[in-house]
Image 1 (cartoon, helix red, strand yellow):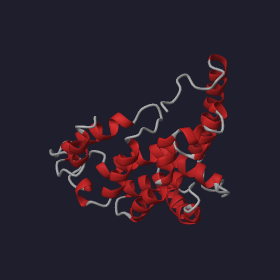
Image 2 (cartoon, one colour):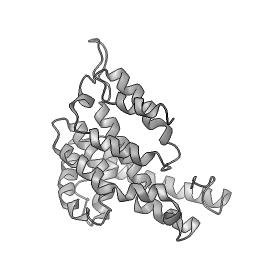
Image 3 (cartoon, helix red, strand yellow):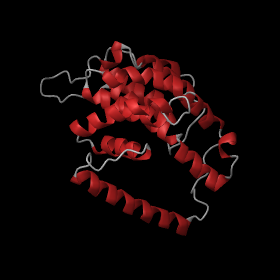
Image 4 (cartoon, one colour):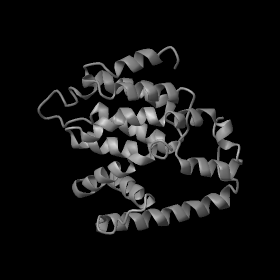
Length: 232
């Protein structure tokens, strides 16, 4: 991976969307596995954050033929990866790690600690995209920004994000995005009863049931919590 990584990262800025799609697989794929923060995750996250506002990654994200549907914009894909990575390093993941591995969990998990330290820099790169012309980009930026605001210097931004969250809930039907922003608003102390629709309520109840079933299964097959120890 080390020798091919520079070329893959450079490919993220290629004007050809097919080249960018391959570059995403080559650069991000190897560090996207089992909710783990790897040593290479940190520099890749920094690079991705640095190029978010480059016009090249948002250009040409449509099929070349008139009968081809639009592809997911590279910018949205990169924001989604930053979001997933931030959630893999959030306070809940730390709490789970400490519960199963002791209070030394974060101290010994240097890669996660390094990513968590970078949250203000990543947030600064994402924040301008909250007002992007494209709704998919705005929504992806919001979902990526939410877990970053657990950092102590970013909690003051939650009021701004709450306004964007209400806008998303008024306009988007994307299940993943709605779940993320509803969870955030509730965690920040907002009353979401007027913002939820019937699908939101059904999804919340289904997720709660699945979490309970999974927790029961994990306790029965592996009392220690993890089937595999994280690689740190």
